Image (cartoon, rainbow, N blue to C red; front, side, top):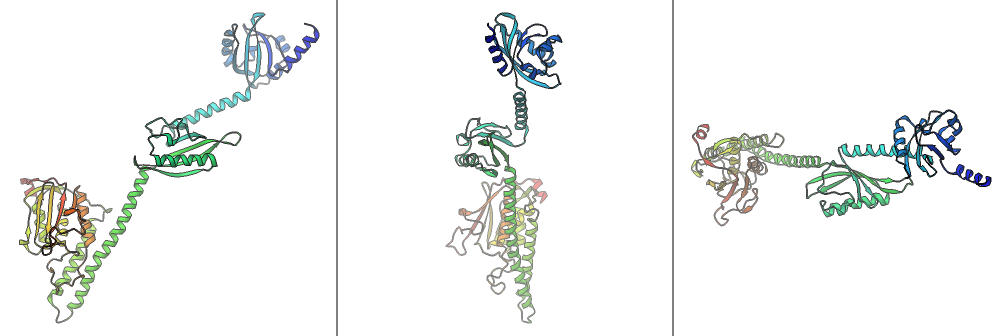
Length: 475
């Protein structure tokens, strides 16, 4: 090789990125030769290292030396590479990517190029740490977190919510377990976030098929050039909260209706009592006015009793025990009826019920009908049959005498009395209906052509059994 050729080769080596070198493969791997880049890389020039008797491994971080030795040992006729740390003369630590192979003219020597990849390696390691942190978040965060690409396909998700199939690589509209309408709405949200860069915050999603509610937020993900590359989403399950809201709404509406019913039910008997009281002052007043006033006050008191029965959080507090159906019916008729002979009591059977509440239910039904009254057992409960049905409760001791109570002036009590009956029946786990499927508030008479008709109210789902001696003694 002439001088010109050698100078050209030297220039090419010096301008090659990184440090080109030859070093021996044994012991401390002394440097045979190196390009000028070794000074920038290590802070030492090759001659100084040779004079000091230092090899390449003396520059390698102690924790990485065995890795370098192993990589060099594997470079037997084949190219190899390793990424490791070196310690510069000023104490700084740099990362190098070392690519080498055994020299063709001397197998004991390796030759290669070492590139400074400090920034790249640090960035890679930061990304790896970030990935580990992200994975830990996805594993432990108490919400469902997911990442989707620019096509709306799942690329990563947490395991907080269980899914019946793997959604990775699928759009919401490709997932079978989401109903079509909900899937379409979620996908359209995804595309709005990705295509328009719009943020979706606290989007409520309902899945009627499984009875679940979710609250989802989605934000666009950007690459280094500021282009949207997908989205990041988070979903919280709010089913318990939604059910609590619905229950609160139901109770609030019920309380509003309850207040309206109470106001109406108690206003009418009190108005009647005041009207009768004014007439009592007349020297020629009929004794019926006194009795009517007393009955109106009694009706107002009954309304108050019904209110108290429903006042604890709007729910009945029941204390079921074995009771005799016949005994409860007779007791209720003595309180609400006029003529003892007008009641056809049921056979003496036993059921589990709250005696006082069941008696009140019978009282309220008896006041809605006219005598005669019959109560009988059925295959799955019992029935109350009344001679007709009035829009207003019949008042004990007054009946339908127009001299005693004017039409339309009776205390109404319809909503509260019948509502309490339904509450008592439902609280025991039973069902109530008027014969023919009509509503309890407006039942259809069984025989509309008969005088006054007859109305039959059926209570089902009741377990009846023969009365025991213990039941009889408890009455």
